[in-house]
Length: 461
Image (cartoon, rainbow, N blue to C red; front, side):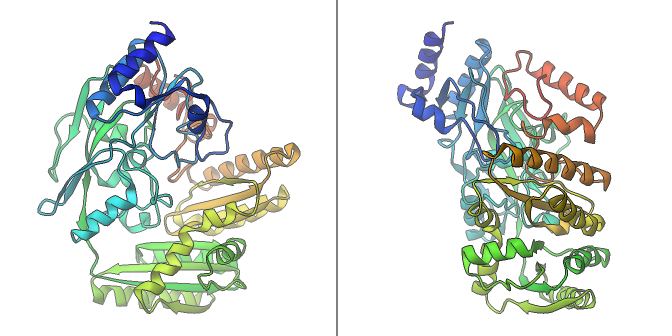
C-alpha cells in the first residue's frame, strides 16, 4: 500500500478529522518531556473508539508502519518519541471512566483518563487510588500503566503496577487480548498484565484498564523537618525506615531545590535550611499519633533544627503542592533541565545524596536534588543549557556517573520514569546481555515486524 493509500485507509477508520498530517500538527507530537531530539512522525491519529484503535493497530502492522501510542507525553525518558516514518496514536479521545465499583473496590477506565481527575472521582465515592505521579494533573492512566508510574505515595502504597488488576489490549494484529479480572484473586493463564505494565507500549496497545481501589485512610498527619546538614536529613530517612515505620510519604529537598520552590510557590519553606524532609503518616488515628511521635523523635535525634506540623488541611495541601512544583520551579532557572531518577536501597540514601554532591562538584554543574527519599528514589536535577556543547558534554558524563554510582550501591537505572530511548543504552549495565536478548526474543515473537514503539526499553529488537 502506498503512503497515500495508507493515510486514506486511516481516514476511513477514524475519520478524516482525526488524521493529522500537516507539519505543524506533527511537530507537536515529535517530542516528549525528555531532553532528546524531536522526531517528526508521518502522521498523527486520534481514534475515538476502542474498535477504531484496534483497526489502526492492525492496519499499521499490515503495512509495517511503526506505531507510538501517546497519552499526555509527560514521560521523561523518550518513551513517546516516534519513528520518522511512523504514526503517533493519541488516546485522549478514549477518556471514559467506565465503572467505579464501591462494593468490590475496583474501577474500569479507558487509557486516556487524566490521573488526577480519576483520583478525584474515586475520592468522591469515598475510596482511594494512591499512585500520584508528579504530572498527575495532565498525565493519563494509560501512560501511567505503560511507564509503571510511581509518585509521592510509593513508599507505603506502591506504584501503578500494584493497582492493575486486569487489562484489555490489542496485539500487533489488532486482535483483543484479555488478562486479569475484577476479582481479588485471579490465576487464570499467564500474568500478561504484569508483562504489559511498564513495557512502554512495545508489546501491545491498551484500551481498557481494571484498577484496584482501597479505602481512604481515616487520619493523616503531615510535618516538615528542617535540617542544618544534608547528611542528617538523609540519615533520618534511613533511620525512620529502619525503625519499621512506613510513612505514606517521605520526601527530601536540598537547599537549592528549597529556594527554587519557595521562589516559585511562596509556600513558606525555610530557605536557609540545608535540607528538608516532608513527612506524612496516615491510617488509624491512634497509629498515626504513635508513628508521628516516633518520627519526630528520630528527626530531633539526628539533628532536625525544628519540626513544623501542619495544623489544617489547607496548610498541609499548600506544602504538598509546593513539593509537587519542584520540577516546574527548577525548570524556570535554566533553558534545559535534565531530571534523573536513579534509585537506591533506602539504607543507601545518605551515600547517594553524597555521591550526587560529589558529581556536581566534579563536573562543575548545578544539580538540585529532591525526591521520594523514603523509597530510595531521588531526582538529581541538572540545570544546564543544551546549546552549550562543552557544558552538555559534562552533563552527559555526570548522568552516566549518577547511573554508575546508583548501580554500585545496589540501585537501579529508573525508579519510576521508565527506560525509553534515554536509558536503553545503559540497560546491560544493570542487567545482562542475556537479559536483553531474552527480552528481545519476547518482542520478536509478539511483534515480528517491530512496529510497536520500536527502539524503546531494549533498543532495536
